[in-house]
Length: 465
Image 1 (spheres, helix red, strand yellow):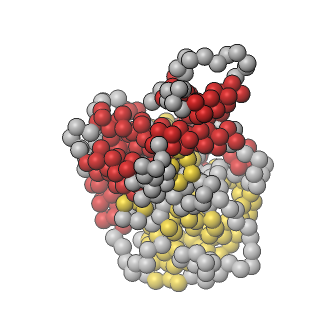
Image 2 (cartoon, helix red, strand yellow):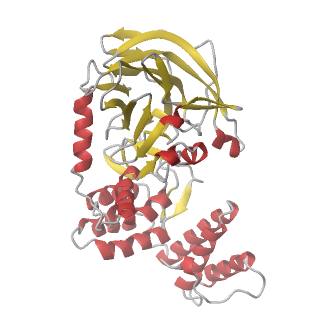
């Protein structure tokens, strides 16, 4: 996907276009094409301390400016209440999403390229700047990191408790504003100048639209300065990994190679389909020694029901059969009476959802796509049979009861469409003569969802799987 200069320089449009880079561990970097953060979840270095959950924001943003011939212009953009400063979006000449987010800037007789990527399997983000073509005079790039150190649902305010010191080595700086959070290491090929400061009242307009607190203060430890020449690259890598040194160019080359060699490819030449196909990998993340499915970004974790709805499209259609097996077997150990936890990281008695309809959908997809991958239906069999209930309980009655309970939970949560799907599944799947109680209860609840007298035996589209 590419965005031209006209749309990049249209602030409202550019703020509405968001990009996402994931690291396969539940962490990510995200933001807008304009460069301004509009959500509390926008960040450069956001890591999962217990992958893929327990996420914290460590590096929020970079304040960037370029000096050429004694004049300067910004690359970054910030929103404040009633003000926009700086306005780097005005100089953006284009944006592309593949193989990772890349911006192009043009002003004062020079052209620059800025790229950002998250290497797979690492709590790390790389930002690089490159001068495209010649320049009329020396080009100096100044980059000031903005840090917070907070849970990714929270907001950060100016305080006296921040540790303002930095540990500086050649090409490496370490900051740890708060003891309770990981230290941030920055590797660079420029010069670092320590100079702590606060940037106050950053405005997150989407949080305001959601009716939530929407201002935050960022702490900035100092500034990195780079001299750009034709053919040179300015590099800045942030990580929580305790490294003595890192070859940034090698990290970038390895990630480029990994993405280019990915065996999964879309069976179509349609550009949008190919981008969606490639984007599907963002939802497959590691948990322990296996893999799981993130229900969505920026804040969801791996939810039981969502996992089995998404699994056919993410894994079976795309040929990721080994990943499908890992996901199914990981959830199999948590099955109880036909149900799986809604949240794998919070398995209280109330956090359960029915997986019956999702499992049926998964089985149907498996029947279609598993010819070259026989281990998928085997895993599904283990998923279904690893239940504590034995022959003392009618399995069909148990299934009907679980489905009704899930429908009740959905109704209580206001998810009426989901509840209707579950209720019709009971009415249409079980003979009323043998399962009178369950079918009758389902019909009563369906009537509550519709006007009196409208209940019939029509199969609603949402009831099919």
